[in-house]
Image (tube, rainbow, N blue to C red):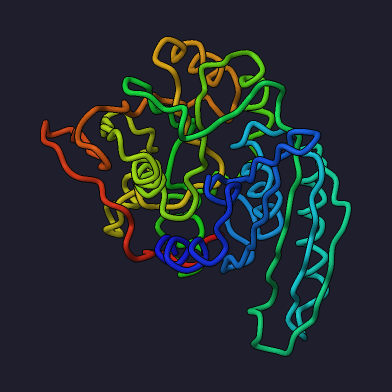
Length: 320
């Protein structure tokens, strides 16, 4: 996916706004707006902790929040396979409605198409969102400097494992729930209270490892060193990952964010995060370092170092 975006879409559609490759586009036109779009093809439609409807709302809201934008308006497009049980569709729309009310966003336009059986795997959803960027905030990868700290706002790898367990009907006995959640209530108030946050991104497809690699690849003047012992991973997730042979750093998340924070403001940001239920498990996981440029290195609990590469093959496709 990373190569497809970089080698095809980016080359053919490149422009100054797209060049930023942010979760949302920064549009400086009369008002400072963020605009994003996303498509959701998760399989199965329902999983522990969420469903495709909740995922669509939270995912789009979070993309706006990563640009320091207060989410306001969303669109909703449904591509429905002929023969889908109406009760399933109603349940998904109910979930969308509940998530929208909780996050304070409004669906103001949309579309629905019906395709032949086996053409859409029950239902696909596309959402776009618009938000107003907080005054005087401009989060950008270009703001990052040596010595900045990397914070993760919550425990990792829960979403991908929840989807995997439901899809494969795995009775692992761990009862892992997706972390699917909208982060505007957590992060927008913090952004208004401090200027220490320089950049944010949600580690969805490809997990924490891929997101950190995207950061250093976009700005190759530095590297990132992370501390394995500081990574917030629940005992259930750690046990399930070891049992399945999957590195939790590469498992998708839907309710946490990676923050790059000014060193002097790290304690304040961390304290504010931990006052909110969604940030209770926030941790400093790493530092922006001079070397090795363009790479992510993990200091392991064994006292060794390992290179954390970009994900090259999806261990679990269609998780969002």
